[in-house]
Length: 396
Image (cartoon, rainbow, N blue to C red; front, side):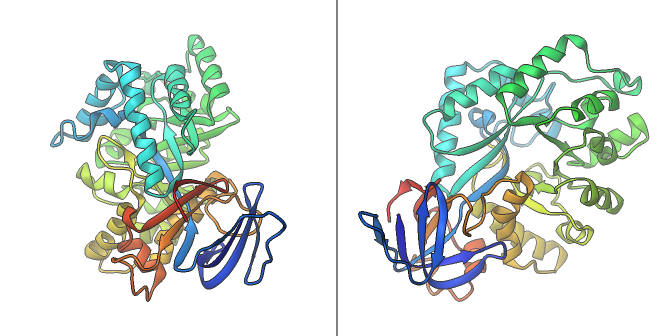
């Protein structure tokens, strides 16, 4: 396929290129240059008026709770989403697999229409949960990273005693890892250091929630005398989720020992837990990606996530973040954290991308493309979404 006469955000720095041509072959960007002649019988499409940007990488989701949208809206974090006694876990256990699958599929189609080409899901429900999501995705052209979880949580007394991972759960973990892309651990406050060390020996992706709330940070110190993030690092995680209340020391350690952090500012705010300190994270050298988190709390919309992060950070800290950096959190940085050839428009990368209408009512005139995308663009500006070189939504 040859797409001609379009603007693009190119490379790791999302540099704006006013007009170029792109050849897509075998699912990747094969050539990117102003002059490309189509080969014999090659499809050639004129994309005048369109801006091509990398597909969004939603780096943290829980789509299993799509059935519980806005349940217990005014309750605490634990009452809503605690993995043991929260409303979410009760809803998931009491919902039929068929109903759950239908709502999860709706969320997947919603993500595609909003330009999300890859999502990373913390999949509850053990092996059955992973299997259900894979079934949902069997006829949905959406790229996924599935992080499974053994349904095993320890009490505070067990954590103090540093009790090990139970032998009877070893086979469960092996089965989950065989079917998934890795593990998504609820948090250090539900697992002893011994258990986290056991998980650290697994060879696929290892990810964990950490320092999401003031309560979780204080609970860790109360139980063990150690920082929640320090304990989370016992997992040897490839990246961490949230870090809303991480200290400067925690962030320095994370920058040295992991690929980065996935922040979920809308989810943190909707749970009345504030937002991450982006400036402190960047000064520590952390690579940041964005996620929309629980569907019961948020719609899976990266446009809204970027817009919220940009404006609320300015409102609270009176400092502006370069909108290009926020757009990188939704694209380039997700690819870096996952170590996948996605999130970037450059030769050799997978052709996952979004075609935006530069003449959309909310975007024209587009004086600053990065700012326009971050705080003006929406689903309505999308002409088409491409995953692996194939148009999966809309048309060009």
